[in-house]
Length: 534
Image (cartoon, rainbow, N blue to C red; front, side, top):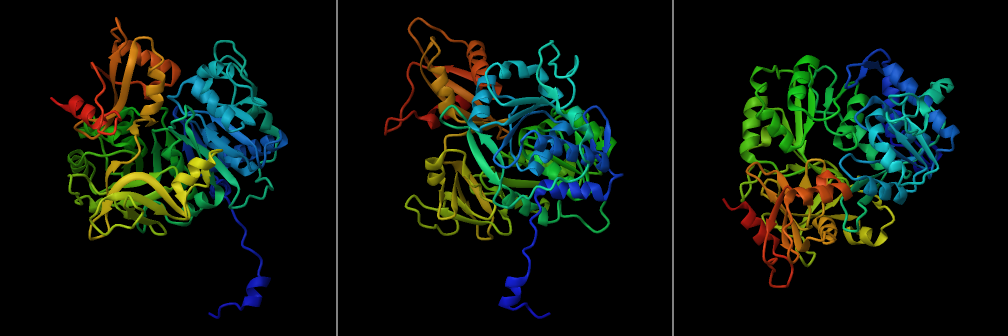
């Protein structure tokens, strides 16, 4: 084959960019009779019906002024309507923002305002909590994804939420809208914990996200049936990404409202699930459940885990139970996937007994930097830096913070790690003060700032403590105000009401003084050691 000349290359038309939402919907249209989505109530939706409803919704949003530069914010759960709304918004050209469960209404209100919300979409799973949020925000439009439980637009208590946009879209065309999306257009803003009170917004673009769809999903073998993914964790997080890939590659998604180990095991057997994503603490719940021994797990081809440190002992136990199907993923919202540890590589154990997080994926460069910025040799521990085409565009409206972590095309992950001689990466610690819990990330300074407003607390230090299974828990050391004796229950209620349940401490330690390091900072290593002592 002769390569085209420079003149011919100039004359050749540019290849059309097809966004991920468009790819997913086209895949469903090409196989309209396959089961695409099974709802938490057991309702099966075909690819053709799901695509048609999504196209109609996209046209309805466009007719209401949603397009480039607009933000569609989703107050949704694990529903087919939530998936459809995300794809429809992307087809319209809008950026998408998810409001996570577990955050308090005031925090969600701040997020809604900070992203310049054009339309807020609410589904049936979140009607009950919508009224409190709506009392705190002022957005141009609030619409529901279906009728409320007591009638159109109701929250179940007679409080009006908004017009049913799905019903309104019934007469719209069931075809892809003619909106040109480019790789540099905004895809969405994902939020993680932040030190300012408002979680950091991570801006992603269509191009980097679309690149993940160019590779086979799940390392399929010849003759394998299409994947069947069980989405039992939030679609607003990685379960949503895996749902996208599954639907694009001819598979189907089974939705659960929340993670319940008994229901997950039953669904694996009943639905012949091939793919499952869990955080390590959720994997341990499966291992410890009495139904495990009598559950047929033979359909599983891939049990992916990640998001926080995993216990090597429990992972070895999981390998015995599930077989060679475990895949560990290391990634972050700022960089998407960074490294992966395959089913046959779980014998890789680091100096401190921790599992490797795998080798960098194709197209991803990882370097270990010293404090002076120099690249460290194999075996030496330092700051993990990443460069790839999938890095975030930056933090939403925070250019100074973006400049601190993105320099010369490299992302400072905030993690501490090292490489072994075979190119496997190990994470030893986190440079940033961050606690990873089931449901999200907790920055201790956020909780500390809040607790210092409590009348019974004079000083405090919030820190994470890992249990024997490497799961992290939020602890707080408190110096009581004179004459006060704060109790864990009241502190938990105080934090939950103002920040959300994922921020609430699980343990309270009353101390006479907060221990300090030599430079005068709270000595959280000492506090952590004391809390972990038998």
